[in-house]
Image (tube, rainbow, N blue to C red):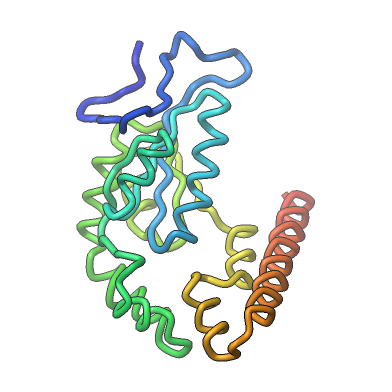
Length: 212
């Protein structure tokens, strides 16, 4: 029996298997990965989707409509999740990257005002899902999970620790290059921050495993 629910339209090349193909070790489940923001927010979810698909599950990415072609090109089904943002919009990038008000702009001016629309999108994306996994800023995901009576997980702890130290956008590194006029400084900064981010994420994961 197909795992595709009513209205579900997989992208071209979507790796969807039938329930008859599942193994005893890895029973198939439909898992919706809700992520929102820049490429740096999307790519980790794509990696998780690849791993889930390799295990025999069906992964669906719910994200900004801007990413639909990219997600489907990777072989995964896609569901739109508002508000839509474009990582190539320089005006909004300048505002969200502001060191003093960037986070406020993201939450108060972009995410929260459209939480009702995001909630409607999540209901449509996850109505036939077995599990919802959400990015920290997809505020509508836990609300939809509660309404639909679906299990919900947040990509928190180690993921958040990674975000504390990692450079958030390519534009940040471009700014460092422009201000220092040095490729070496930019490369050294990126290497140091990524190494620190992965170390923090690894430590957080290991500590969480011990405590739980």
